[in-house]
Structures are given as C-alpha cells and as structure tokens.
Image (cartoon, rainbow, N blue to C red; front, side, top):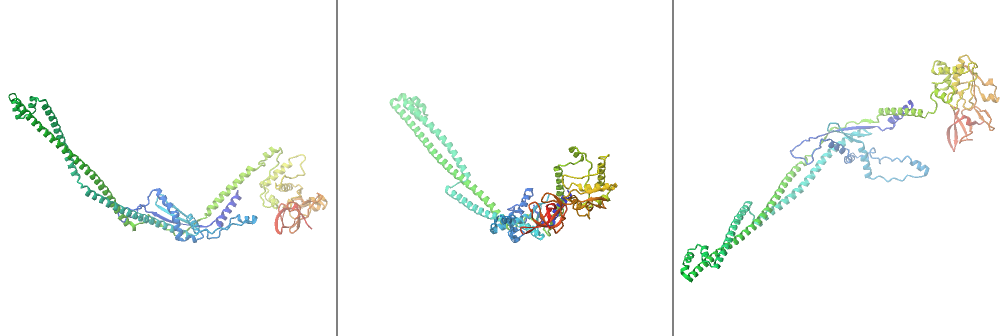
Length: 627
C-alpha cells in the first residue's frame, strides 16, 4: 500500500510539476445598476435590467454569448494568436498513423487548408472556453474571469470582454431607439394621412347632405309627432263624416220626412217640414230639395276632410323620409367624427412619443459599470498540493484494493491450524520474514539480534525438531519446498546457526545443485561441490569448508548440467565476458556473451540477432560455456 501511495504521489508530482500547463486567472468585477440615472422625465424605449434572479442569470449568459465572443476575437485579433487559433501551429498526426504507415503502407490523406470561417469559429470557441462569468450571492455584482497561460493575456481578455459587454448594452439600446424612431415616424405619417382623409370625408358629407344638428333633428321628430296627431284627428273626422253621409243618403233614399227632419237642425228644413201637411206635393218637393241640398253640403265637407287627411298623410310620409335620411347621415357623420377623433388622439400620442424618442437618441447609457478592472493575473493551475493529496489518497486506495484483492485471491493457508487441519501433519514451527536486505546479512543478523522474533522462532523450531523424537533425536534434517523462494535455505542456515550455539557440530549441505543459493550467503568458498564429490572429480576434504561466522561446516552445491547422454556433471564456472551457447528455448544454439551475473543463478547476456545487439536474461542452467 505504501508503495502504491508513493508511486501515485510520484506520478502526480511529475504531472503537476512537469506535464501540467501553468494557467493564470484574472477577474473583472461589474456592478449592475438596477435604478439608472434619468436626465429627463421621459420613459425610455428599452427598460433597464430587472432585478429578478432570471434576468440576472440571463445577463450572465449574455456575457458568455458567442456574439460578444466574436467581438472579443475581432478587437484583440486573436486569430493571429496560436494560443487560441489551433490552425496556426503544426497539426500533430494521430498516434496510430505511424503504425499504419510502417506496417500497412497507408499514407495519411492530405488535409485541406482551413478556411477563414473555420479558423474564426475555432478561435471564438477557444477564446470563450477561457471565459467564465458568475453572479455574487445576494448582490448585483458580476465577475468575469479569464484563465489562460499568460497572466497579462488573462487581464486583457477579462477587461476587454467587460468593456464589450457594456458597449453592447449601449448599442442595443441605441439600436432599439433608432428602430422605435423609424417605426414611430412611419406610423405618424400614416396617421396624419388617415386623419386628413377622415376630415375630408366629414366635410364632403356635411356639404352633400345639408346636415342639421341633433337638436334640429329632435325638433323635426317632434314636428312629425304633432303631424301624426293631426293626421289621426283628421282621419277620425273624415271617417265620421263619411259614416254620416252614408246615413243621410240612406234616409234620403227611404224618404221618411220625420227621420229626415231629425237628421238636420236646419230651420228652413224644419219650417218646410211643418208646411208638409198643408202644402201638398209642392211642399214635399221643397222639403226634398232642401234635404238634398243639406246632404250635398255634408258630402262636400266629407270630401274636403278626406282630402285634407290624404294631404296631411303625404306630408307626414315626406317628413318621415326626410327624418330617416337626415338621421342616417347624422349617424354616419358622428361615426366619421368619432373615427377622426380616435385617429387624432393616436396621432397626437404617437407624435408626442416620436418627439420624446428622438430626444433620447443621445441619452443612452449602460445598465452596468466596471467596478473593479483586472490588474494582475494570478496562478490557479495546476493545484500542486491538491494533486499530490489526491494522488496520495488514490494511491492508498489502490494499495488497499490490491491488498484486499490479494487476500481474496490467496489460495494458501493463513494459519498453522488451517495447514494441520487440511494436511493432517503437525506444524513444528513458523518463521517470520527476516528483516534483511541481502542474503549475506542473515548470519550477522542472527548474531546481533538473539532476542528478536526471528531468533525466537528459530529456537522454537529447533526445540520442536529435537523433541519430535526424544528417545532417538534426529541427526539429519532436510529442508525442502515445492517451489523456489519459500525460505528453505534461510531456514536451514538459521537452524544450523542455532544448533552451533548449543555446541553441536553441524555440516550444512547445499542440495540444490541447480540454483546454488549458498553462494549468496558465504564468501571465499572453494571450487567444486556436491556434484564434484559424487562424480569423483575432487575429494571431499577439498570441497567442505568451515565458515567461521556461522561456526559450521558447509558443503556447497555446484551447478550441474546434463550431457548428451543425460548424465549430470559439474558445470564449469561462468564469469562475465565468457562466451556461451544457449541450450534450449526459442534462441537455442545461439552464441552470446555474458555481460553480468545476476541473482538467482541468472545471467544477463548480449547476443547478435539479425544484425542488432539484443540483451536478455537467461537461467545459468540453460547455457554452456564455450572454450
């Protein structure tokens, strides 16, 4: 875990101090004036910015808009700056292109040169990506921040964008005012023409229809009402006269003198009626003639009453027609007058607004002002402390993950009890890992640390071995393992050292004739070993030596090899500079030269492969020395 943390911190530090690009930030502060100054008491064409949260956020987006970005690029000529125009520098080819060319012969297609529009668009996008804007909490203060690789360039971008934003506010108001003046001018002209047309129509209607006032029209209506009353009276009189005339003619036809005398109050007719009995036929003729004359008079009166009624009815109809015509014309006149008045009101309103708007042409001012311009850019990236801290945390987490994964994937035995339970064999001891960096420090550590945990574990193991058979204590102890690197050599040397401490005579024999690990624990060892003694090449007394530090006799192993007949023989000593031949593997029968001897019986060799010098590591038992 500590190693992972250290590696992560190293990688993070290398990134922070060597790879990451240094960036500097500069901030310009803009104050929004919600209540702007008003030179004249005239309502503005464009109202100021509202103080609600939505409007303030809208202004933030305006600051970051592409429109202002284009003005920023044009004003500062950023298309000529390689920090913003990606087409100015050399375009790197894709990482895979070299492999496509080398392996498959696929050459990259030539790229068409970028157009001015493409370069401008890319520059605007890169420039605005360095800009950020924010609203300070519970205030009307905006902050415009620019972050680039140059502190002075960050200052220039932030201040210029703030100036462009304020100028854009004025330009928007000026444009709105100009549009309003143009629209109002057109509308006033249209209303003026419309008003003149309606006034001409009113004059024409007045001259054509000889219009009277509403009061005179009311008098005509009253006259018509009176005429209607008179007509009704005349119709009644005429009707009564016609009924009496019909009655009189009926009496005349009947010839009844008494009824005829009663029909009239005429004195002559009354006197003639008195003379009827004495006058004879002459008196009757005179009475009839007088009655006929009176009937004729009644007929004339009736005819005159009927004629008057007809004449009066005709006059009434003419009066009604005249009233209807004048009423219609008056309604049309009033409608025209109302429309003309409405047009006049609109004309006066628009004309007054046009004059007010014209006055405002030179009075536009921005709703914001620069409160604090950017002066110096300050370092912001990379945040080295944070990167190192995060690297440490991530490295520690990775180390913990690796440890947990190892524990999860571990398929061995964790405790002695587990080993005894699964194998049925008693565990005689457990040895911790020796706290040494090199193997030749083992004996020295055991002598200097007799009370250490490792020394105590060795003593416990010795006791378990001795007590394993009290009647016949073991004389020969063999240490073996299924795989290399499990500590059998270290355990054997440590156990031999412990027995020497008890005054025992110990012969330590290296049985691993392939790896020869004893050579890393002891120095000044004689030539030869187990294989030399067994093959009779050297006597035993020339091979076994006494190590004064360990206090025991040591019989070294000797690297062996199989000859062509399969027999094991001693391998000649290998040294740096020897010429060898590889016996097995993909490079079998290849001749090489030993550069250095490595731990674990491995050699670092240099060989010529297809005209190129190749270095590799091989096991010493896979080579033979050439004479």
